[in-house]
Length: 333
Ligand code: FA5
Image (cartoon, rainbow, N blue to C red):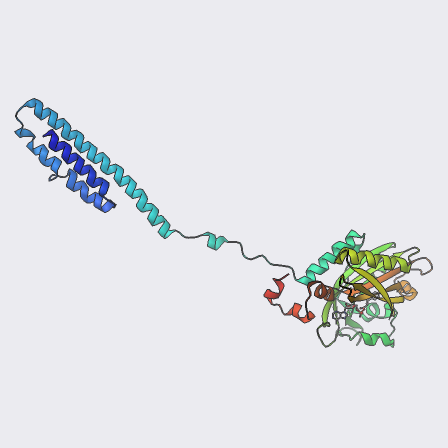
């Protein structure tokens, strides 16, 4: 009998080990421990054993065998349960990172980048930053800048007029130079100021001309300021903004609000000259319009186009490309 019990136990344990699903184990539970299981049948045969000792020994062996089979079943059930749960979990898993993934980071427009770098470079050279209104009076935009109503230089600025006040009295500023006057009126010299901003001209657009663009104005007013200070400042700026391989030159020009006046060009490391803007010594009439005595104070001013600088810096072929609002364009820089 003991031999049969051990054989039944070994067979039971083997079939448990062979089971690969919880369902199979459920079936085995009845087959191996139920009323018709080999061990139960052996138990039924206990009464037929001849001696009490044999009955006791076989009974004990049967109990041990049944407990062992139950234990093995439970262990296998736990193992298979864990495995099945893992399979289910990975099948049903939601990839939440898909929903929480960081959205693509935005970028500043290259004109904004140039504007910010220009401010950084000039602040590094000791300048302060000021801004003025985009809608200006004719007086600030032209007259105070030594351009009385009949002045021919006005024709260089194709002007957008605003329907406000006397006809022709209010304009969208055509340059950042009117902010010079506002600064002189409000800040006691010495003045070392830059004035970036948006300007407007009623022009036909092309690869280098926009109707809405940006300029940065510079104004220095102090005692004993000369053209050499202007040239030195332009050169220091050129190297700080573009890099050590660049240099600058001033070319005689004409602006009503500066005397003498110059065009400011930079030379790239390849040797090409690019025109960046205008500059000159502040005209005495302009100092007077700003409330300063030209006998006591002198200074220089400059103004150049930020959009054209961004265009040159990034090798953009046409300034209009920068304003197509195409995200693929902005993402390149
Ligand atoms: C002026 O506007 C003067 N106020 C500059 C100045 C300031 C001279 C202080 C002296 C002292 P101008 O019209 O040349 O000058 O414009 C200056 C710069 O603005 C140009 O060199 C160019 O870089 C940029 N610019 C002019 N017109 C346009 C345009 N339509 N589109 C894009 N950039 C332009």
